[in-house]
Length: 415
Ligand SMILES: [Zn+2]
Image (cartoon, rainbow, N blue to C red; front, side, top):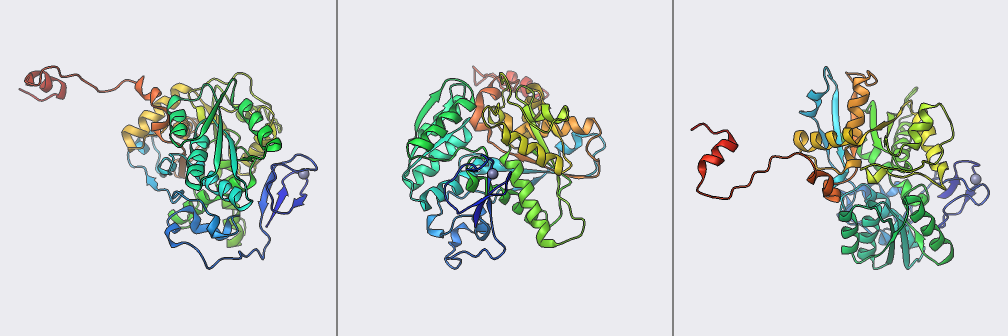
C-alpha cells in the first residue's frame, strides 16, 4: 500500500500526508496487486455487518486499530410511492439510506477509517473542519477512542449539528466566515501543532478511500446489477469519488469487455454550485464560489483554497458520462417533504438534494424512463430541524378533550 498523487503519479510510503510534496496534488491510497494484510486472520466478527466487512480492501493495517460504531452496511430502499411522481417512469428507483449511520451521516465511513489510521500512526489529538456532519462524526469516534478532538465549524452551522458535536464532549471553535475559513485553520493546526487532520474534503486520503464501500454495498444489494445513474450531493466531492473508485474496481475484477460505471450525477445547491458552474460553461477548472447561500449546509462549500478538489470531482463526473446539476432551496424543501411523506425517510436538506435533482433531470428528459436509479440520502433530518419546523404541517391543538365534534371535523369523520 502506498499513497499516490492523482496529478503527477509520485508515490509515497503510507504515512499521514495530506497532499503531494512535489505538486500539491490530491493523494489517494494505492494498493499494489499483491497487497496482503499482516493480520487477515484476526477479523472481528462483530464488524461483519459494517463496512469493515471489506476491511481487506481498506487501509487500516491491524484490526486492533479499527475504531467502529457500526458504520456502513446501510439499507437500500426500493421506492414504490415516490416513483409515481415521475410521470411515465418505468424503471427502478432506490434510496441508499446513509442517515442510519451512527451519527446520522455517511461521514462515519470516512471518519471511522481516518481516525483508525490516526491511532495506527500514534496520534493523540485530531482536528476536523466541518459544516457539521463530519464534526459530529469526528467527535463521536474520538470519544469512542479516547483521542482528543477539536472541531472547527462556521458560525452559521445549524444549531442541532453543534449540539450533537458538543454532546460527545468535543472542543468546538465556531469560526467566523464560511467552511473554507474553518478548513484553513484546521490545516494550520495539523501542519504546526501535531493534530491529525480529519477534514473531509480530499485532504485525508485514508478517509476518502473508505467511501468506495458505498459502491461495494450497492453492488451486493443489487446483486451485481449496476445502476444506470447514481445521484450524489457534492461539496468537494469525495463521496462521488468513492462511487467512481468502487465501481471502477468492481469492473476491473469482472474483466468484462466494455464494462462501464454508473453515470454519476453531482448535485449542488444553486446558492453554492462551483462545480455545476464549471460544468455548464464547459470549463475544466473549477473556480471558488463567492458568497454561498443555501439551506443545504452539508454542501455549502465554496472550495476556497482547494479548488483542485472541485476540478477533480468534475473530471470524474465527466468520465462517468454523468452531469453536474444544481437545485434551488425550494426544490430541496419539496424533495425533503416527498422523501419523508412518501418514503418514510427523514433527511436533512443536503440528503434530499439528489431527489430534487432527479425530478429536475427527469422532467428535462435527461433520465431514461426505463433506467435503474440510486439516490444517496446522505444525512438525517434530526440534524437540521429548523427547516422542517417552518414547513406547512398537519398539527392541530385540542384545548378541550371533551370536544369530540372538533376532533371529528379535523379528522373528517362524518357525524
Ligand atoms: Zn504530485
